[in-house]
Image (cartoon, rainbow, N blue to C red; front, top):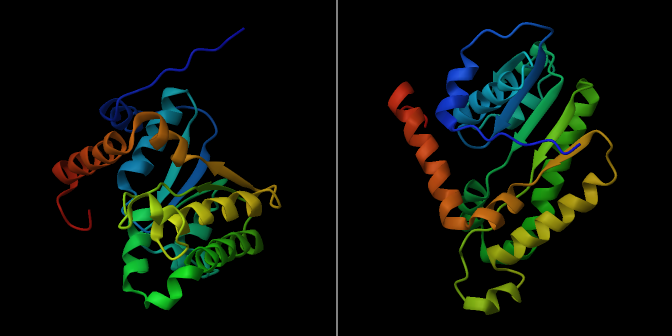
Length: 212
């Protein structure tokens, strides 16, 4: 029997996140190099809409390494069942632009080493399953279509990074992909970015503009 999928609005998920849900709770930690307030709340709302009780730990802004490499971090004390890692392409682009030009060719390999270090840190300290988001493409074709051929261009590095990520995840049974790329490809980049910006506006309206 084919199951139907119900898609909730973000406002609906926020409302559901604040409602009580009985039963044993799944513990989910959300880490990112960007603000993850809206994502953490949406995860909680989505699970509770499915009648799954959940506790969500929303890590401080851009504190992935402090959370993962400190044995006594609040995240490990939370004892999560799942750890969501969101490394935003937009923040990576900022890092890429700050680097010397001669380093651009190796950007993907160095970023993959960092992500693997995140996984190793978790596996050493926790039995949590890892939900790793992949990397959406950014419209940075400064050389037009030729950018896809030039290995130092950011779009080329992001594509290489996604390939490396897929290869490495195949070797780790405890790491599960979250395919943001397919979502952006399905709905279009402009709509994907606009949706994220609208979510951030909602968060700003409720929580204020600090660190959002």
